[in-house]
Image 1 (spheres, rainbow, N blue to C red):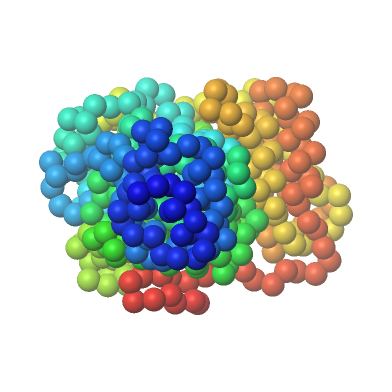
Image 2 (image 1 turned 30 degrees about the horizontal axis):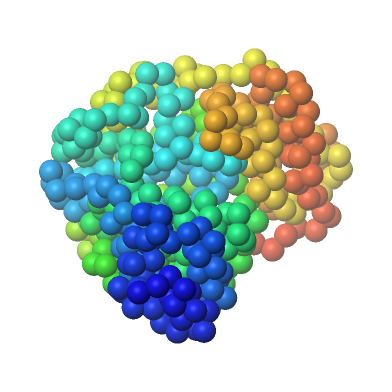
Length: 441
């Protein structure tokens, strides 16, 4: 078997065998298949695509390239949630405690953020004392005892995916749906989940800019799950403006706490109910999504989910008093209001630009070596569709460095579009994908 023949076969639009895909990935990891050959193969896939079976085989080849986490010491059905990324996406901070309070184990392994804002790990580490580098034994014990633990990913999950992604990043082959789907699903499968709920974002702040592409990606990932024996369902959701009202690590933790106190923004709360109800069904806690939603609504209103967040924080060394008093979280020295220059309606907020403004402040990383400032970020005071008067505050910038703040102000101002007419409503949820098909709302 030769890499040349495999590249030629895919270039000509033919389907690769399981053995050919395994040969290619194993050869790439061992150095027998060169970077330039993998680049040629990735470009062939970009133009020719892959079948559902090929994509599942590629996923599993990347899973086998590194460590596979065995979650069998944890009792019950382990359901994971993955978001394809967005701005202000603090969903896990609300959803994890909600689902755990319902009795479904949440064994969450998350990475650090690279780009707009920090990842879930960075957000949690803004809580004084919170430890994400816990050992496996403690991770398993915490989930068995309190139904939830959140830890940093091991460095050896899917090394083939990391190596291939770095190559795709410099060869203009990142935005291939089979390659994106296999990349995401390989990490979820290697992390040991029994079932997976996917939050596939669409809009200007998402990787999938169009609704059509988001549904294609969702279908590809659900298809992989079905092929490899993982129950998988996807929800296609909006990321045309930031989720909730905060962007930045400690600010997002504060908003998550407020949401668990039933005082959070409507979009974040609704998204958590939608994703959480699916986690409860996959985890065997509810028979229908409606039943799951009712369970979650009661847990939120009773304070049980908030108490679960406090348990999580204290079990991992954090200061649980922040749950009662969010003001104990890191804060900035300064704030800067961004004011409307004219009357009208907020017609659009470019989520990607808001994310970039937050990154400029220090809430995210341009490179892996960058150090995050947990306190900085942005509060969105006016969202899409809201009426504004000249001089009213659109957003508030929280900063520690004036030069960064001025750059962020310029970017954030350009992110807002104010018009005389009110924009048409844009849904939060566009539809669902499961093994039976796609359902658009």
